Amino acid sequence: MDILLFALCLVVGIAVGRRRLLPKPLADRSSLALTGAIYLLLFLIGCELGSYRSLLSEMGGLGLRALALCLGGLVGSALLCRLAGSRHGL
Amino acid sequence: MAVPSSAVLQEAAMAFDAKPLLILLAGTALGASGFLPEGFEALMGPLLKGALVLLFLAIGLDMGKEERLWESLRSLKPSTLLMPVAALIGSVGGGILVGVAVGLPVGLAAAASAGCGYYSITMILLKEAAGIEAATVGFLANLAREILIIVAMPLVVRLFGKSGAVGAAGATAMDTALPFIVCSAGKEVAVFSFLSGVVLTLLIPFAVPLLYRLLS
Image (cartoon, rainbow over all chains, first blue to last red):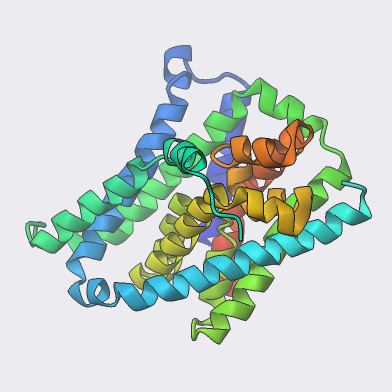
């Protein structure tokens, strides 16, 4: 259900932005609000991450698996896009 | 294998925005120091949800007011749309294959790979959907992808061609990786790369939680 709530927020945000329903000084600061929200969330998650000592001690193993995942995703995207691009003359 | 020159590395270091990483580390240091107030963990759930609602509203507002973005999206041809979709599917497919091989659950491997380099949002969404350990994997995998793509772009272009490079850059094709793609693959891919990144940036906030729920 959360995903529907987030989709709704996104659509409401776009509609408000497109129709210029917010006062200009406030609308001009939407990028700032976005950056602020991301930073706040990262800080909060960081706090929780730090409080899990056991997770911090597993960071090396998690990091290696994350790196493998990164390479798998990167190569997967590159191969499929190369295929899609060659079919469309890109 | 091509070794990036020091000039390329220097440029890459300047393009990489370290602020999100530093903020996360500052939070981690505070959490590890034990100075957090009692009951912080119970507050985390509702706080995170409220902040996510604000985040999606702000993303919408930010997109809604950008006339140029809508003009670019209107000019999208179906074949241009194919590229970000292929990048997302390829990333998830490759991520599942490798992720399962290294012992990660399918749902986490798929969701974290769907982040396509957009590490801040992927971490936040995975924290909400799957918990702190999954969020950490999602963060590290996507941060590594952003760093790797800007450092190794010449090699990526040589191995996978121009469209392959745009796909490999994922969501970062519209901002961080764009100058490196243009530098290695040529100016003609700039608009195409930007649009691919924009479409992926719109898809990722939905793909990450959806894939986690479907495959877990």
